[in-house]
Length: 153
Image 1: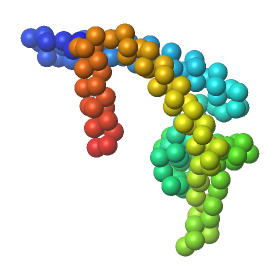
Image 2: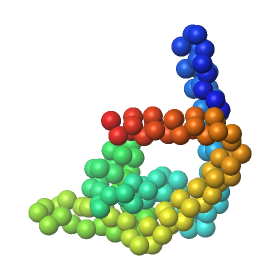
Image 3: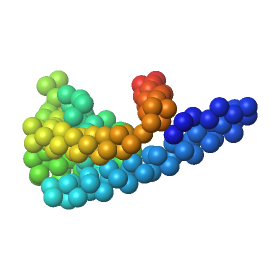
Image 4: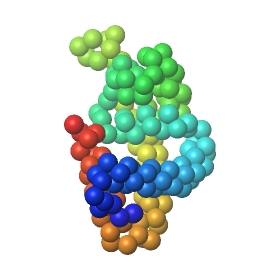
């Protein structure tokens, strides 16, 4: 997946974007199939798992934070949390300063699930990356840094 070095920058960027889209779709198919099988064992949907990944990187999130991150209404976010709480993957707490404010945090069981799934995804990606040449691996690393920088901005 070597990045293009064309004289027409717009065409070059578009060609690179098309190749990257193919790579993302391929890796997504590969990883998601495995992920789906594992999540089904624990009765966890993709949106629930994505919420767990958000929670795994935070001390807690409020219900409105969850709704915003997930692109859902607060009612839909509450439904996601309800199901995860019944499975013992998250727990609710009341804020000390305002008991009306509900905070949600991941439990040890939820953290274990996220860690297990991350390990599975990393294993799948290692297999994909092992077949790349140096230029392809460099292009993936460059793209990863660019995407990470954009997410943090």
